[in-house]
Length: 141
Image 1 (tube, rainbow, N blue to C red):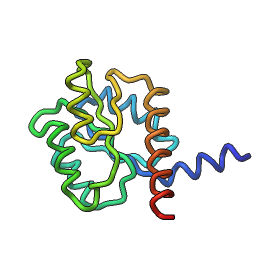
Image 2 (image 1 turned 45 degrees about the vertical axis):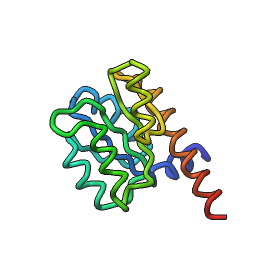
Image 3 (image 1 turned 180 degrees about the vertical axis):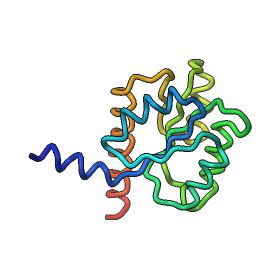
């Protein structure tokens, strides 16, 4: 019985997924939708519009996208008061340490390699949200 209550509690968290690849969106959607409220943007400008409305707990952000790339979206999100403190996890096919270092310097809390395994996505998302909630709890006291 408690298991169901925990899932319901998770549902209150809202995640924005920003990715231009339908296959990747499907994988992440199947991993997260049963547990979280999921909003999806297929490009940077749409992501920023969704973020303007506020209420996001986490952003999963593809690095390589046509037009505005993930690094620029990340920077813009951090400049917006509605999302400046929202944790960001980069999704990337790149596996160079330079790319990872650059993403972390940009303020990302984690990296998920693409193509992603649904259980890895779910675990990293859960960890990032739990970490954020703990931080908020510590700050509030």
